[in-house]
Length: 350
Ligand SMILES: NC(=O)c1ccc[n+]([C@@H]2O[C@H](COP(=O)([O-])OP(=O)(O)OC[C@H]3O[C@@H](n4cnc5c(N)ncnc54)[C@H](O)[C@@H]3O)[C@@H](O)[C@H]2O)c1
Image (cartoon, rainbow, N blue to C red; front, side, top):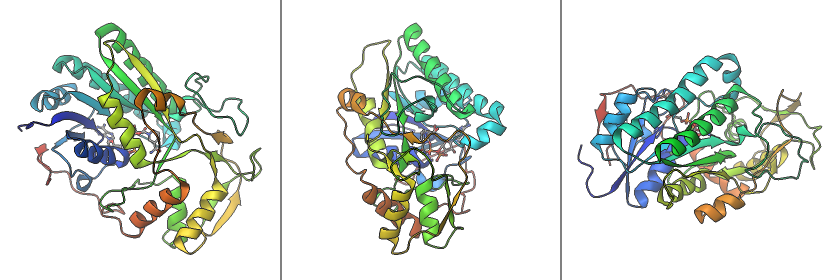
């Protein structure tokens, strides 16, 4: 249970996709990532860079105990439910885990005297807006979530901002656009079940591991008629979190920053990039638009660049697809190979 000389950071949801990559980046920068996760969608095999605490993010006492045991300096809060479609069917569950979990994290931080929080927010806080297809989104854009999932992210931000003001915490909310890719080591990668993200679905279709891809609409007001999204390499996201932990902020400060590249890629461009990398174009068909799909969601990342001294380095579409393809060909876990829940607190292998 000793934390050693490294500064400990509690990483809720650190057994998941973005959390595991961030834990690796923290370790490489001399921090001790302490993963706190209930493994509801994460994987024990993804926890490789520090201790693992099995727990539910709504459990204030368990969070406080983990923060105190490892003398955490900061918390990065990833744990939550992520499927937009499911949030429409189960808004109760999403508010409970995503907003209730954030409230428990904030309360436990007060209990344990931890003052720095980095929060997983999302481009979903912006909703559809009335932007042109080539307009990027600054942090000041109207907040109008189009789903209960987006509502929970915005509510989480507001709760955190109020806590910062009232209790002298300080926090950075990172609004991610589309996380993609995998660590080039091949040891960790994206393993969502069900998978709803375009790049892994396109790769799986090209490899014949899933059915042909459906392109949801090709009549949008965009250069090739398909939706534009801002794909950010998961290791660029991870680096943004480490920079946010290291940031000097005054007590009470709350900052929100978009983490994206500022460049939109269309669904057709993704299909083409996967075809180039895999040597076989993903079989696909065009279907109707999905309700609530904005034609374009592209970040203006200027604020993150200035605040964090951060730049996306690995986020060309070809690099993202190459790294994702390496993982999809040989995943180290996932594909139904979910690890059984082990003892409540145990040490990671390394
Ligand atoms: N993937 C993206 O493109 C994207 C975009 C924007 C925002 N986000 C946000 O980033 C965060 C991480 O996303 P991800 O893609 O890594 O998802 P993920 O499902 O891979 O990871 C989520 C982790 O949280 C854990 N978790 C869920 N409920 C929990 C609970 N009640 N108690 C403890 N742990 C719990 C899961 O076991 C999992 O390890 C989420 O908050 C998500 O909303 C993701």
